[in-house]
Length: 53
Image (cartoon, rainbow, N blue to C red; front, side, top):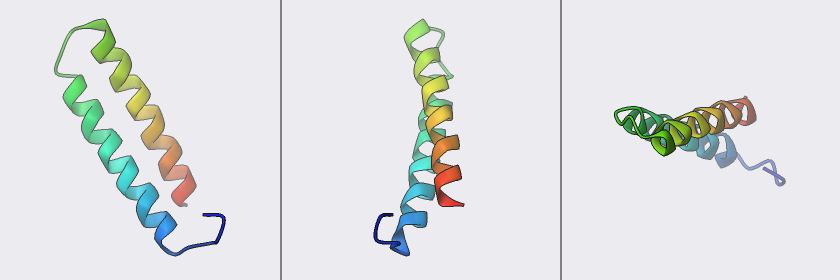
């Protein structure tokens, strides 16, 4: 991103997709640490999307 690489946006979008997938998987479980992980992953996905725009 510091070099204005054209790949940076793709990388951020990929990261967001991976975080969304993790959140979806963690949401399948009722354990508190899984719910916390899902919330953190959703937050990370949102930040990655902001960085890609």
